[in-house]
Image 1 (tube, rainbow, N blue to C red):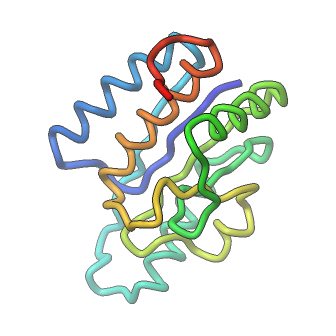
Image 2 (image 1 turned 180 degrees about the horizontal axis):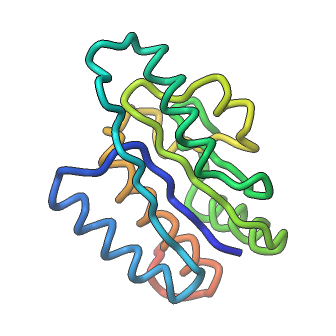
Length: 156
């Protein structure tokens, strides 16, 4: 099983990139983990939000293999405690399929992305910057693996 964090656009916030790199380097001790940042759309300023979502969806779908389990990081997704998320990650580990967590652009996901996804995950009821969510997600994923391994990072 491999885990990919697939994002639209690169982060231009240094501390977000540093936080993502820190948790990415920790995660590789538990699971093959990588981040793939797709380039932002060229000429997006002349497009309507629905057109942007559609074009971003096409780019995201090209980066996903047919065999991947796809989970959208979406404000309307299912919410978990850290322990519940760890349990879900344990089920994905047992299934043995590669898992792709997807961070969309500023306008969210296209209908084709919702159709392709097996699940939606919300990190909070509050809306987060699509750049910041990368680091928050990587930390929660790291926390999930420490819970699964019985390591002392997570406190109750």
